[in-house]
Length: 254
Ligand code: PTJ
Image (cartoon, rainbow, N blue to C red; front, side):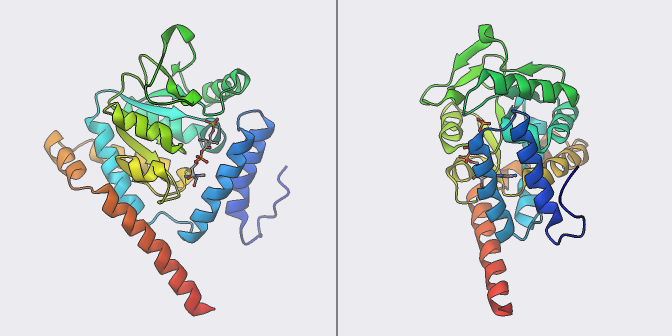
C-alpha cells in the first residue's frame, strides 16, 4: 500500500517516483536509473509538469514518422519497464513496431525481469533476448552496442525513451531516424535525435498512440510534409524558451 496521501500537493510526482522505486525493488531498474529519474523530475518541474506545445509538435512529427517507417523498433530499458510498460506495449501493438530490450547497465537477471514484466503487460514477441540473433552497432563501446539483427540493427526508425547520448549518435551514424523521449532538452540524446519529445514519457506515450491513430488516415504525402516541416533544433530551442518563461513567471511571483 502506498504511504503517499492522496491529498499531498505533489501526489502525482511522488507516485511516479514510487513506480521507479517499486521497479528497483522488483529488479527492473538499475540503481543509476533512480538517479536518471531524479534528473528527469527536475526538468519536468521546470517545464511545468505538463505536455507543452513543443512536445505536442514533436509527438505529431513522431507519429507521422512511425507511420512512414518500414521497420520501427522501440528500445526498452529498466526505467521504461517500471514506468509505463502497458502504454509502451500499446504503442507497439497499434503501430506494429517491434520491441527490443536493450540495457545500458547490462544484467541478464534484470533483462529476464524486464521481459517477464513486458509479457505480463501483453507483449508477445520481444527482441534482444536471443544471443544467436545479436550483433553490434559500430562506434559504440557500451553494452547498448549489442542489438538484435532483426530489430534495432535492421530498423529504419528507432524509438528510444530515456537514452544515453552515445547510442543516439551511433544510431544516427548508422543512418537511422531516432525518436527520443527526454525531459532534458539540453542532453546529447535530445540534441542528436531526429525528433525529440521533451516530455515525461509517462504522459507522452499515450498521446503518441492517440496521435498515431488520428494520423493513420492521412496519406503518405501529407505525413511526409509533417515530418519535413518539423525542425528538431528549433523545437528544442522552443522548449528551452518554455523553461525560461516558466522561470521568469515564477521569479515575478516571488
Ligand atoms: O536500464 P538501463 O540499464 O538501460 O539504464 C537506463 C538509464 C536511464 C539508467 C540509462 O539510460 C541512463 O543512464 O540514462 P541517462 O544518461 O541518465 O539519461 C536519461 C535521460 O532521461 C536524462 O536526460 C533524463 O532527464 C531523462 N529522463 C529521466 N526520466 C524521464 C526522462 N525523460 C522522459 N521521461 C522521464 N520519465
